[in-house]
Length: 338
Image 1 (cartoon, rainbow, N blue to C red):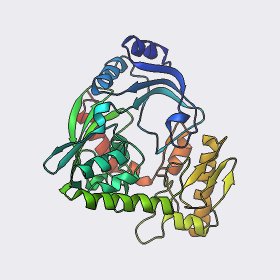
Image 2 (image 1 turned 90 degrees about the vertical axis):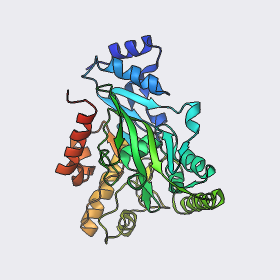
Image 3 (image 1 turned 135 degrees about the horizontal axis):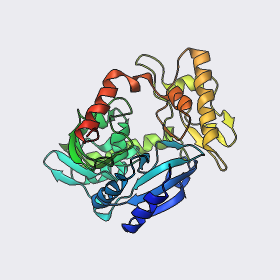
């Protein structure tokens, strides 16, 4: 598979495209290899242009990135097309229609929270604690502080890079499940409509400050991707508590370590590699299973690793019949089976 011809066509269309570009600076872990073909887009028109060209290269795999805050990209990189969503100046504003707030897919979640509160809309204050984009939050069903995208999203306007079709997809059709959805690497979230309620801005500001304060007190900064492992079933201890009880706080491989501040965070230091992050994850998973008899699964999306490793960290429910059908249904709606 080659992306040279694809890169040339994207460049001829006036798009911001680079071959063999480092992806590490585009993620919060700051590790990983290069993308064979990386195109930066900041408008729906540019996404459509990419789709039109990509349809002539069906063999090329695709990866859509926002801020890269929930990604671990292998040191070998990604051999396909990486579409990087960059917010345009107009995407720093939200649109309010009654109880509905609409935001562009490339808007950062903390910006969404603050803009909504500024418009006297309540219900999205929790978004200030999510470091990624709105589109990425939909794809991964991001959540925190007792809320998630499932409880907030009405629908999303999604474009398929494979078919070129764009449609407004309902929350049900998005196939949300815990830290995931029916969206794939060929789907671009252009905008999202979310439900809110009228609220005094001062109240919302206080709630945002409370979320920010809690995160500063309980979670580490630096190079990480947030919580690494999904919490076990209700009634069990949290993933962080299990990791801590297994004596893994501070465990280190190379320049990568389990955070001393929050055991479900893995920190990447100077000189880190994606292989070291994956090795720490593997050690944590196997040790917790040995000590507690509980297998932990990853919240972080792994890209470019071996199929065996990605299967090891993927929750079994992700391949359940219901989730597979939801993905197939969404692909059909977007004309990908034609």
